[in-house]
Image (cartoon, rainbow over all chains, first blue to last red; front, side, top):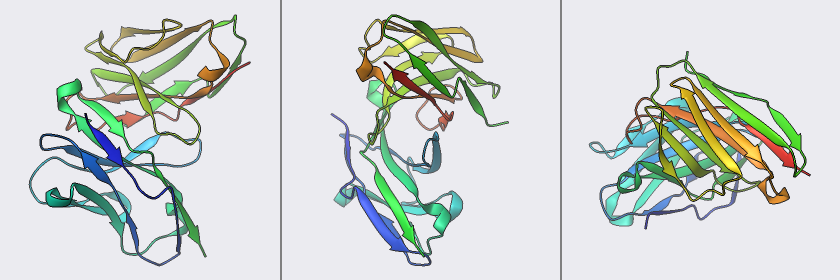
Length: 114
Length: 114
C-alpha cells in the first residue's frame, strides 16, 4: 500500500536560514509526488509536483524538491526562509492504481524565528 | 479564476440536526473531492466525483451524503452526526481527476458537532 512518512513533526529555523523538510514514500511503481502547504485554518496550496523527468523540481515561493529513487525520498528545500513561510507542510503520493487518490503524510509544522 | 469557495466557513450543529456544506468552482473542472481533516492530522479523502458521477467513496458512514448537482457544485449533506465528526471539511477540484492535474483546495468548513 502507498504510504508517506514525514519524520519531523515540528521544525524551527531562523529567518534567512536554509530549510529542508524530509519526505519518504512507499509505492510500488513510479510515484506521483506532491508538496502542499497549509496556513492555519486554510486550505492546501500546491507548492510543486514530480511525475517524471528532471529529478530536481522547482515550485512556487522559491521552493524546490529533489526526487531520489534510491532513497525513496522527495525532500523539500528552500535556500532562505521568510517569516511568511511558517505553516504546515504536507508531502503526498498519488495512488494511480487507487483511483488517483492522494495519500498525505502526517505533516511538518514549520516555525520561523526572527 | 483559480478559486474554490466553500460555505459556510463555520458550522455548529447538534447530533439530531440536518445541515449541508457547499462547494463551488468555476474553473471548468470535472473532478471534485471532499476531504476530512481532524486537528493536527493530514486530510483524508472521503469522496470523489468525476464528471458528476461518484467515483470513489472511501467507506464513509452513511450519515455523510455527497451530491454533485452540476459540474460546478458539490454538496455534502450531514445528518445525525457524532461529536467525533467535528473537523475541517475541505473541498477540492481538478481538471479531470487524472493524477498529474493539480487539485485546488477551498479554505474549508470548520464543523463542530455538539
